[in-house]
Image (tube, rainbow, N blue to C red; front, side):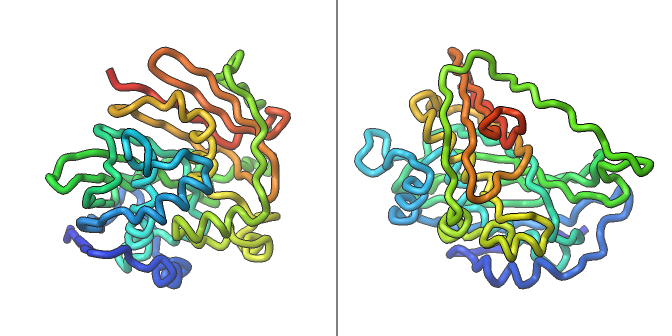
Length: 300
């Protein structure tokens, strides 16, 4: 299989990529793997106004003026988002992007992410596998510094739902299993308000202009009753509230996205902190429906 490597010296346009995303694709045959596609953004110097805008919309402390002067833990995912779009919109990518579901992320920060250094970010397609709900596939992302030292890596897992593997079986709707939070006796508990404009504001920063995040009208075209928040914003906003407990590198963050957060809404954030790790959950305000569960571990 021929490997296709795309190289950029500035962030590629996501709007151009979106024009290609809705084009129907042939899909994968049983047992078939994804093509070998990769995209790299070379020696990019993070723009501090962009970093500041991300910090502000998530409620994170400002890196400039802090002792460490390092980028936020999940910021390389923001830099990589246009690269992910290049992979999904590539002519050789066989899966139609409309309806894809962002399931989870696993992020490892090996070293601090310097605010003032030229970084090279690379994203490539990983393996795919058949699951009960359809087909899962991974996007693997790495960030290296100007000396080519690996600072950060992540696996993003996405689901292509299969109509033949829907939640309905033999005409009967599957019973919803009650959500039991793994967080008992939380150390932190608070209500987070999510305004109606959140999707549009965050899209302007992360360049993810997926219509499901922008407006109720465009969200309804894809089967949502209202616009929904970006999962990575919900994660970033949650991390801001537990920032004093986020360990320094090396550390690993695992997050699973459960149910969408509709705009506008209020959600409940709970957190439990242990010696070397913390657990987070974002649910409806009554705790009945999960939106996100995450854990952050200090690598020892």
